[in-house]
Amino acid sequence: MINTHENRMAEQQAPKAFRVALNILEKWKCSAEQKQHILGLTRSTFFKYQSNCDSAKLTHDQIERISYVLNIHQTLGMVFSNPENRYGFMKMVNHNPYFNGKTPLELIASGSFGVLYEVFKRIDAMRSGQW
Image (tube, rainbow, N blue to C red; front, side, top):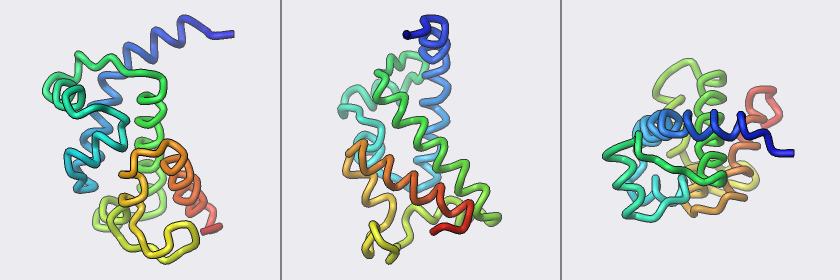
């Protein structure tokens, strides 16, 4: 059963979460196109919301994407104490399985929700040393 109170809260918090996700993606040095793909937004909608975050009317899929960006950021903050690694990790070439010489950012910028989830899962595993 869907809780309408929770849905309203998520809708109310979406613009703030969108703003925070944009800040994180900026610190990861993402291009506008990469941000659009990661967040699952069209070009025009992305620029509209970017210029006025409070107007953001996000879908469930987009809210989940934002959640993964926030969780990746939080995990990197737990794993790395220095800002260079915390914000630079997403652009570092990774030779571990799944990444196969690509950067995490290259993978998630494909726009695939499944890839975003898989990258999050692998980064989250770094917290427990299961990398």
